[in-house]
Amino acid sequence: MISGLLEGKRGVVFGVANQMSLAWGITEQIVGAGGQVALTYVNEAVEKRVKPLAESIGTELVLPCDVARDLEIEGLFATLERTWGKIDFVVHSVAYAHRDDLRGFFSQTTRSGFALAMDISVYSLIAITRCAVPLMKEGGSILTLSYLGARRAVPGYNVMGVAKAALESSVRYLAAELGEKGIRVNAVSSGPVKTLAASAVANFQKKLRAMDGLSPLRRNVTQEEVGKAALYLLSDLSSGVTGEIHFVDAGFNMVVSA
Ligand code: NAD
Image (cartoon, rainbow, N blue to C red; front, top):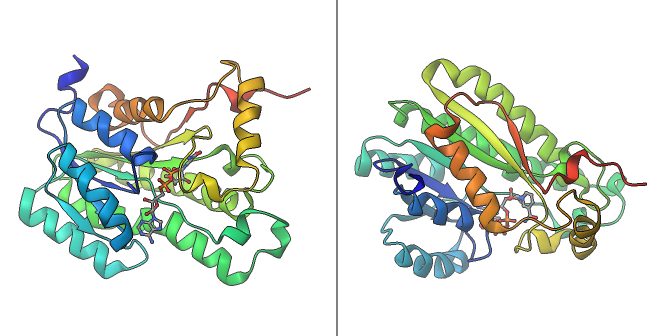
């Protein structure tokens, strides 16, 4: 049954940087369920890594898009409209902050570092959604990725925690606005998974070890598990769900350490 879940559905995935990316785990699930994807890349270095991955799943649509640039976002969706006419889903798996802002004292965050983190990690969801909505002619599902640092002061996560709080709030506002068009907007809040972006966060290994000891499942979650939850939120299995922050973190968010 899972194999046909997204049969005939098409969409775009932002945020595949390499094989470890959460966006790649999500892409594999989408393709496994019969969906078709377009992938995007931010620059030439990422393009070189994404192209072979796209080839491995038979995807020809691999398009440039720096989410800090409205014109590139508009150009991307214009290409999708010319190629497909309509889309059914969008995966926003993108975040960025200066490395220095992901360690040390939160009070030292610069104005420009704060603005950059919010622009790439939060505003981009709004800009992408604005362009995606006209193509979601039969409704659709929009998904982003968050982390527990949106709700708790996780040491080192700093400005990205504030960005994720704004991202989760944006999910609710977008969901409230777009529900009447049959467009659902949700987030997966993932536990720590070793990726390029995660390696920029201070004490990342410590966060992984804390999960091993304290999470109810006594382990970390995998890229595949994040992908499977994403598949649920992107497919009709979650047709009654919107504005939700769906934790995939082995239950870690609900426990209190002694
Ligand atoms: P990743 O490094 O594989 O993915 C981050 C992506 O953001 C990369 O593909 C990068 O190219 C892209 N990106 C950065 N700036 C961009 C820009 N200006 N335009 C377009 N793309 C840009 O790391 P990941 O861990 O897979 O991160 C994906 C999402 O998951 C992020 O939102 C991250 O905060 C979130 N997340 C990750 C974890 C984790 O532990 N890995 C946990 C919870 C949430």
